[in-house]
Amino acid sequence: MDAQTAVKPRVAVHKFSSCDGCQLALLNLGEDLLALAARVELVHFAEAGPLDPDTEVDIAFVEGSVSTPEDLERIQQVRRHSRMLIAIGACATSGGIQALRNGADGAEWVARIYSHPEAISSLAHSTPIASHVKVDFELWGCPVSGPQMLAVVNALLLGVTPRANADKVCTECKRQGYPCVMVSRGVACMGPVTRAGCGALCPGLGRDCYGCYGPAENANTDALATQFDHLGLEPQAIVHRFQSINSQAPVFLAAADKARMGCDE
Ligand code: SF4
Ligand code: SF4
Ligand code: SF4
Image (cartoon, rainbow, N blue to C red; front, side):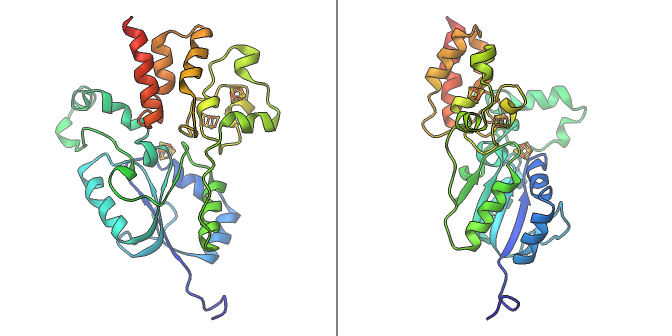
């Protein structure tokens, strides 16, 4: 069978509880997305046009957390219909910013914010996709990087297992030759414990990393919390550094809990 007549892999992009930013990262690939679209059949991607959420696919990208009763039901269906399921973005990999409610009384927040709280149907917790179904690969970030998504699809099309980059943002920062904001200006930076992939975007702009790519492999959060303490951060401020976009990633959750003990002393 030649390339013209070969059956193209079917790809879907599904949205759960999210802001659509990770789908936009894919759309922003521009010409690369058009090239990709020529090699695969994009059967469901609401942001881009095609709609067929219940169809069987080879690769399903899933953006967003499981935060509503409807999400809970639909993720099982997506899993049944997908050969490979790839969770994209902080919402899908760790519950995202909406998981900050996991440590609070979500119902009370809803009652305070909305004039008709009965119209809101949400679960008590926001959870990552892997808490509910088998996930074949995870891409972290808020949002994910489009080129990283492309690299994953290219690997799968070649029959190769995609490689996770679980190194630290500091390694990318050093390679780019950016001045270290923590050493040069005493700014608390999450780079030493955060997963690489963004090209050290924030230090490149002269600001600290706030951990949006989630925990790196072998993240030494104890050492970083001690460094934050030396920089003069109050225990509560250290808690907030770890309790952010990826607050429910186990490594950051444990670091925040440990720092919280300092708040009680
Ligand atoms: S990870 Fe960030 S950019 Fe992606 S959907 Fe969630 S909130 Fe939006
Ligand atoms: S600025 Fe942040 S990411 Fe860059 S080297 Fe310093 S601590 Fe690491
Ligand atoms: S430097 Fe940190 S906060 Fe900024 S984009 Fe990269 S991982 Fe996210």
